[in-house]
Length: 122
Image (cartoon, rainbow, N blue to C red; front, side, top):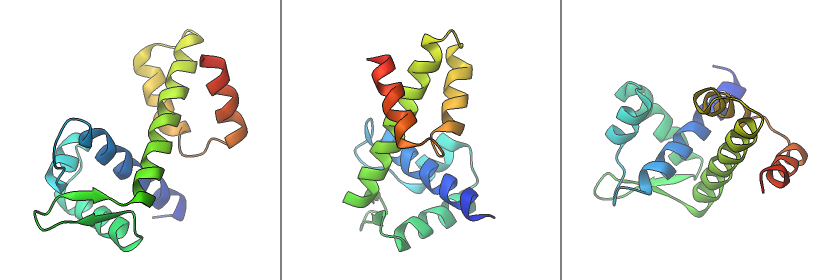
């Protein structure tokens, strides 16, 4: 796996935990696995890497808890996804395609482009 793929995968896990945390009191690896439709071993490896890198901790209930570093990064990716999706939809792209494309764009977008899109949708 390339470092870009590792980075993108880590961001997808963080965003998923962030999204699930909005509706669940605790998020576990199985929740991430089901939401992303990924195998349990793949999610376990991803979670372990995020834990080693200081983005989350696994508490005594085996729940995934984002650290400040993890929360900040997850919020950033989530917000970029939302802005890109809205911008694409404002340009006439269907919601399904806009969300799919936003998932690809959110990992590589520059701050300059993100800020311009944010102004565009406001």
